Length: 394
Image (cartoon, rainbow, N blue to C red; front, top):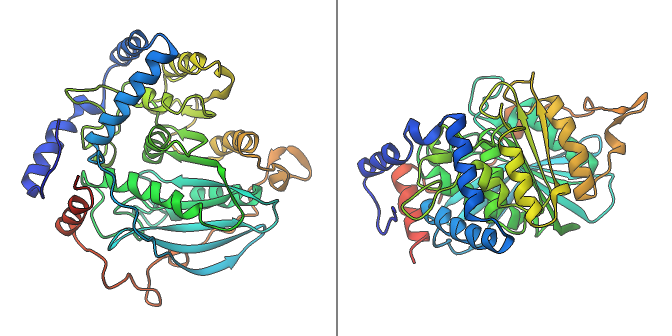
């Protein structure tokens, strides 16, 4: 399998993308996905078999993602500014130095009327564009509503930029290096959240849609600190993701391993998991194909009651109101959040989200004239590649 030991010329990177990100690797037939899951069942009929298999797959996933050797955890040097208090929560703009000279960016939402200690929730976004057409899923209304509502329920929430989106502009998004950088940013962002006052390190949730769902499943499979996961409109046995930030490196298959998103999701077992699917994308078959497989894996642990599927057959590919309203009670149950602050007083069965104030991308910006990107930031694809290669040397 591919392993970089020195800085690879960009032309070689393009060849890697061609080899590991072809349409054949992104999408398969429903029957092919079912056949993969059947093979996985045969490989791991018992819990001990499954435990050994997941250890093997996880090792080669990380090697495929060029994270066989994790970087050192250097100081995060958090930059936090522009805190604003809203109804039941505060929001700030944050940059974290996840590698020396490379920054993870996003918004921090903190409860103002909830019991301590607070669980934490990481919210990655997918390839959704904001209302102005920019690749900035963090500022979309649906993302702000999700994060602020979870904060009003009692969680400390971080809305994190994809690499190459929003304020994360040191390297382009559509490049294979985005895959390991996003995984590392997510891991280090959890590190940061665990340093905050009044947080509970034993209650950590992750949820995102589409490409954010890919990040959710990756993190659930890789980071044992995560205790609850909710991938939305992404988990499928016959689709790996159409962007190089999801499948541009051999994270799914090499000469040593084979996996798919359904098995990756199952690697979070027996931790609570809600998979949300819809009828308008590759998750259309989840209730009949992937969910039974998930149940079978959770069953090996005697934890079949900890995994669930919300399938919305008439819904589009998004993290819209119906999907959020399915996620909220699941996170409330498993993270110890309160539903009371978000229920309609006149109709206690209805979630009430209008209390969230939608802010502009400029208001949510991490780097601006008053708060410029640090002068030592590493800029450009080649410079970021070099930084990453140095950081992951054995």
